[in-house]
Image: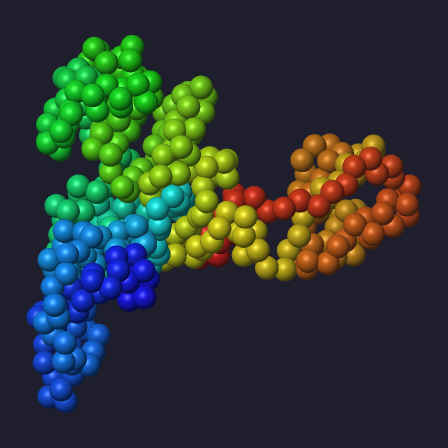
Length: 376
């Protein structure tokens, strides 16, 4: 409430109190129960002298929504479960995502990524749990949720017998935009569809059809963007452009996207969720992900001479090796202890010329493989 008062003033506080008392339920002990379940004490000043408010608000719910709009998570998922027959597609999935955050959603095929996205966007109902988008429950307020979400599904549904611009104008009409023509023009420019706008969608390459899907997802300027495999089918140049666009959009919106391209995750994401067999197995900032792999380190080495794997495994602390090139190897150790001194001793004892050695950090791909391999 203190932050609320600082933002809107004491007069707003009194309006909130009046609305709270009006909408509350009375308890036997003289207390009141606020609509959100919080117990408050009855006060004598139920009808204070009216003052002109700085904002045109007349109810607690409206004022509270204005306050929390930019101070709460855009997407909140708690205990989300989806059951098909006897099989759980997702099991107790929970996470939050805020404005200005790009959240990478990773998992093997069939792990539950698409199911989770479809529930958040209101395409399918959950069996258990709750999901909110910008404060609206996806089950109770599906229309309000859809107004605030832009969604690009894995299999991009487009009308292939429509022209690109015609299709986007059609989508703009569905959203009842105030300036549909200008918005369509902006999205065509943003997604690089200027030369393709008068072509049939069915005649476009897969990469350009993906761009059309991105354009329709962003057309109504949603607060939340959910993109399922958005870079599928793009050539290297298109890939760089779309990645740059996603990164730009992520600065001002909440953006959740799934991909199988780990380099894409490292280049774009602020945070990563990894789901496996329907359960979240990792949720961390991109730079903190390597810390999830306990008790292992990697040292890359290069020798002038060719070396056999059996010989390298004799180095103290090394439990496995991976050949990169005839004389280049990765040495995996059981602990976080630095094995480089042992490698130097090994090279001297064996009469080998060590020309390169450095410790390597685990990549997102390394973490992904480790965490998903445990239960598959």
